[in-house]
Length: 94
Image 1: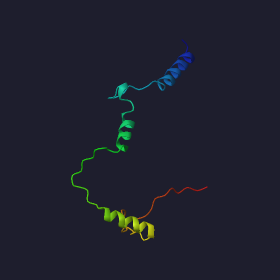
Image 2: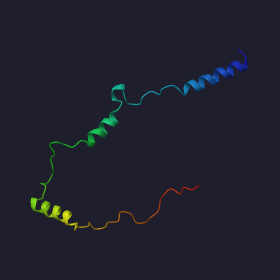
Image 3: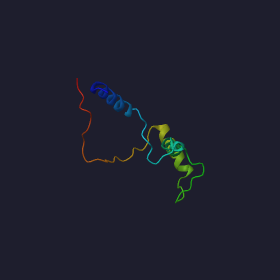
Image 4: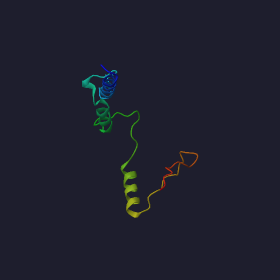
């Protein structure tokens, strides 16, 4: 084999190595998609939820809130800042 064919064979081997599928670390083929299934499961409402404390609300509070919405006098929530500064953004430009 001359050096030219050896070089082209090595280049082909390196190129094909990039196409190989790497072995899975801890997963088997049956575990593919588990992350998606877990995400979907997290979005589904629990039909029988159990809470640590009883839910406290009343029909009177709900009716009063509905009246405020109809009249346009909705109570505005208190403003709460979660960061200490401003900044960020994507500089961008032309």
